[in-house]
Amino acid sequence: MKSRISILVLAICAGAGLAQAAKVKTTPIDISSIANTTWCSAEIINCSTYPFGAQTYNGIPYVIPGNAQGTANNFWLSEIAAGGGSGTVSVTIPINVAKVKTVYTLMNTFWGSTQAGLITVTFTGSNGATWTFDPVGNVNVRDYNENGNTTDSIACQLPGGVGQSATINAWVNGQGQRLDEQVYELPAAFKNQTLVSMTITDSGNEGVQRSFLAAVTVSTLIP
Amino acid sequence: MKGCKLSILLLSICLGAGWANAAQKKISISSLANNTWCGEDLIGCSTFPVGTKHYNGVAYTMLGNKKGTENTAWFAVDAAGHGGGTVSITIPVNVAKVKTVYTLMNTEWGSTQSGLISITFTGSGGATWTYDLTGGTNVRDYNNGNYTNTCICQLPGGVGQSATINAWGNGAGQRLDEQVYELPAAFATQTLESITITDSGNENVQRAILAAVTVSTTGP
Image (spheres, rainbow over the protein chains, first blue to last red):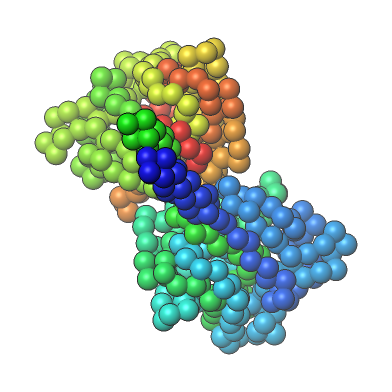
């Protein structure tokens, strides 16, 4: 009987440990099916320096689409989706991961504007949870190219709690080009649901601001 | 009885493992603080935070009181008597198996010249690590003005690395930045005994301000 108690305690302990291990779960999301151009086709400055494949930034693993030959699309560019003109475009990324607490994206813009409402990101849960966040230029997102003429700053923080987002830098090439990491700490309602998808909507324009998305990773941990 | 003892032992180990996962420790620097925000004439001094604060998920003790009569930080400029010369402080830590150290540090004025600020970590078994903070990369002027206004804005990429992100801003141009130090692997089995900050700046060039220190036995 006493031995059974010990086994029970050990099982609880092991279970707790397993749960802890299970919590440490970060899942890169494959966005290759929605990627619509390559770094160089999009005429990104110093495009050949841009990363692809498995990368880790700020401790978070990402998978950026692409290949060494430069023939596979690397990212989703809203400017391409809009045919180089004006109008609202959007992309929905299937996720289907349970109990997500944090979503990480690598997003920057062509050009850049501090006007609110040009980009929204909407997260959709399996049981009705939704959260829409408006990334604003110079706070949450910035021009991929540091040129002093558009948006060159970000909040440079992690989110302060649930239902918040903040941005830090992920990658630079030392020549003025960069990728930034947006960190979204989902509202509490998502913790008991499956994060079904996220939708990015861009209402910018050529010469104003157009967003691009290079990678998405989700985590069941807080940032 | 043996079974009961075994159960208690296992439970202790279990709880201990859980406890170890939440191992952040705020380090008091009150004995080293040498001025107040307003005593130092910082712009927006009355807006600076006091008490326990959380920035980027890390807990800090911000010194001072609401009356502004208690010292709030270590100011290298005061340690140097507002003149030139090298000054330093050593902060006792004495926490085992530290993996990450967080500081809230900015500067008065600011320079991109390297070698003006260094931070040395000392372990109980001989481990040492000295990191040179560079203005515009690891540390910046507390005031968004004419000196250093940029930081690397990343978390460290692995052991033996450091990076900096913003911790606090008052919306009026004043700020506190968070330096994140991921200690070399040698520290994982030692006690972090102390941290020494050395400042070789000067008035109107760059002088460090240290507001808080927190250590953690987990990675950033």
